[in-house]
Length: 445
Ligand code: PMP
Image (cartoon, rainbow, N blue to C red; front, side, top):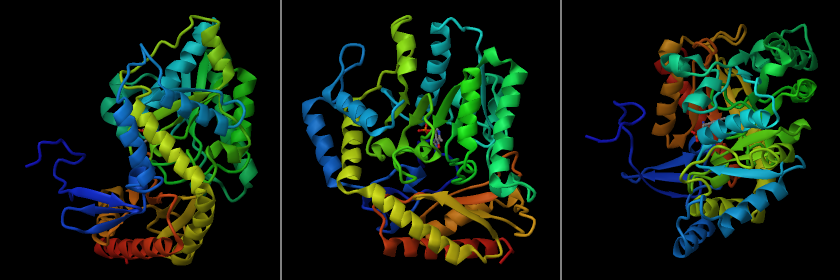
């Protein structure tokens, strides 16, 4: 019996013993195509020799130095690189060890920014109902997934949730995409006005929604409106790109495709590509200046922030992405993946939507295409799809029962940026077979 408390106490998990390229291997020698990059983490695949060499070299030099005493060359180089590769307005970096930590730091940074400026009465955070920002208490409070929050509600700070931007389900036939985007963006303005414009700290959103809904991109213009509204009331815009960022949608940051820049953003997963745990908060000069002209420090910190091994892994991963021109491949293979998914599922009785950007794609599973009715969440169809896919040597990331269990099941794909055309074909073929097997086991072929 395992002494680890796994995600599900009763799960019989295969034992992973190795990984090469886009495949993982279990103790029985079975190979799995990692079409989800774990949870959109393994962006350059497994066992890349350059990253292994960088890690060995860093370990020989220095494994750890506490940030209360030292900075390190490798963390400085990574920060320089992240800022240089980001658009104007992203000027500084704060390192942490993962996505939830990045969101916690972003929230505290936003609050302290206003305290430094003498606006201590700003205390409200607005976020969206369909969102996931992490499992620590602050991040969980901001997230909109009722199922994840329910057991812990008494411990959560008050957060105000507005509608997500989810055109497939929420745009009415009578409105254009632009009108729909404006309508949901104005929910933000209404909420700011309701709370009192001088009481709001920040609006937090995933640029492209990940785990709760499956690669849902915003409609064109939505984030421009959001940015305008935040500026009008002096509210900070925090974008959570823990899942959709660091090249996953084809640009380093997903927000670059929206023509805006956030005040603060979080990244993690693809930053270190799974080789080490690392996350970061990236932010603008105005935030830094408020700290430097105020109390002179950000009142936060963790023991392992800026860890040299994590920084070395992230720097090596980002070098591989640049040297192997992998963002071009994300665009090319992302288009191919979209085309193959459409060929396979556009006329499938139980696939309502195929969506996403770059190598961040999803299908939404419905009981009935015409009215988009979801399957009964009690069927746990997404779990059956995952099982059937694993049986076929395919890792995908299915989720279901998003808002109060009412919005259905989806399957997220986030393969490594190194994926090739033949592998894209195999992924879609195995996913199609897994979905059909899951549906026929659930009595809905
Ligand atoms: N934000 C987003 C958008 C995420 O997808 C996740 C993880 N799925 C997190 C935050 C939390 O990251 P972590 O699991 O590294 O704490």
